[in-house]
Length: 65
Length: 406
Image 1 (cartoon, each protein chain N blue to C red):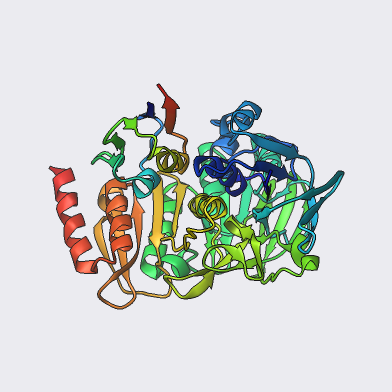
Image 2 (cartoon, each protein chain N blue to C red; image 1 turned 60 degrees about the vertical axis):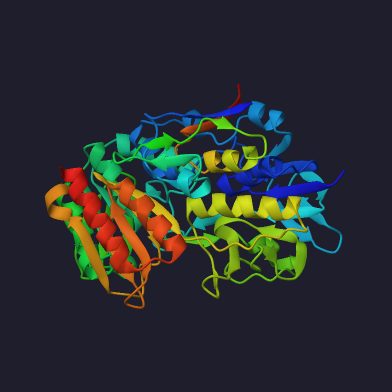
């Protein structure tokens, strides 16, 4: 099972991840990413990887657990 | 085995290579770059790299290890010189031609060169080496004159202030951001620079630059002169499409592509990023966009269309660009130019956080400029995707603003 991880210190609220996969990512009132779920199913993996790579400050990572 | 050759090793090319794997593509992926440098990210060049808070290694987009793991063959230090569309070959400097089944053109754009001469001490900022050379000159101190108050010029000026340098920003427009964001909002950017100690000379052009590094004289069109140690020229960019001209591909201020980002007369050639002029089906017009997020989104679309030719996806993004200037994180989404009708939520003077909402038809939100307010940004991005009404977005952000203040 793959999981997605967020570096909350690096996040600057660009919101590209939310546009890419809004069932996995949101932005809170302080402008920091919120992981709506951490486990990434195999069928979602490509889409979530692409959303993670759309982060301008590389704050997101999808990796095998 | 099928092979995809990607020409251009900046973010559009790298993300295409990675997205091909995420899309399940199992052919060969070759990433060709003109620079010998491992792929790096460009937004930090006018910010962290100049300020010294980022290094070449901290802004890498891809390491050799990561490329190996993803099955991406890096071919760096070779400039692509020509495409033979009939033979499916890309010709390279210093390397045998590469055969492709699919070709991705992601050669980006270059800085428009200084029309007032190019010599040491007169800088543009486009590639890593540019930023490294400029940083060296900035560290020697002295007055910095920045010509062009668009995003790059404004970012360089604000970084130079961080380094405690004396900075003058020159632009021929009286209110530089007014064309994109309208005169009222453009005026707030003028104030922003002033508040942070940048001297601005707007509505005046540059006639000539005399002298040399450490001792320049910038002569302006109103007859005045500025002494400068360093000059930075940020007057826009031009697509790197010259190498395609002999190919027979249609090139017109960028590689002309259809709504699937395929070159209009070659189904197996695709354009990604600053070099691509593609047909945006949502706007019914051809566009060429020089934004980081566009390169990344277009890369994903092109990778999908190469990996899944039976399920072609159109590319119809909502534009998004950001800029960090002084203590403002500016984020612009959708279409904000060509209209003066707008409403403001928040107060730029009072809480340093606001959103400007634009409309073209008087009813529907067409774009937004958001400063220091990520939550409002995501609301605007969703509203633009859904075609929401301006009034509805205005109400939502107003409620959001009072909630944050409580």
